[in-house]
Amino acid sequence: MIGRFDSLNSDITKIITKIFDSPDLCKFIYYDNPDPLSQPDFDTYELMYSNLYPYSYNIDENTEANNYLTVEFSDFKLLNNCFKAGKILINIIIPKSNMRTDYGLRYYCIANYIDSLYNDQFLSGVGKIKFDSMGRLFVDKNYSGIYLLYDITQFN
Image (cartoon, helix red, strand yellow):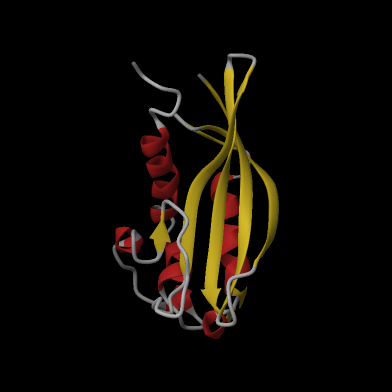
């Protein structure tokens, strides 16, 4: 028997792959200097489980001072037995020492790239993605962050 959440692992992989396919976005995540776009290209898949996590990742005093991105699903609902609606939650967590770039605040630069990848897009297997909201994350005295929330609707 296949449950309603059978495709979540493949769906989150599709969402994260779009990030890996955006080398400039990945440079803002990977590099900690003020001009990440001038840095050399790298294998963007190296970010997985070092800077980018497909689940919540808690920062503490033992966490290496990196830029972090988490991507996860939230709030799935069945609508009219025809659609499955839910949310994509993306947390952007940046050490305060890495926040300033030559392009503005790092987390806003990352948010802009992410929004260009997902807002008003249809991702096969995932569904229609639409921006819902952005807000501030309270992490700790060394990190600052924001979250992006996207609505998704897909056919069952």
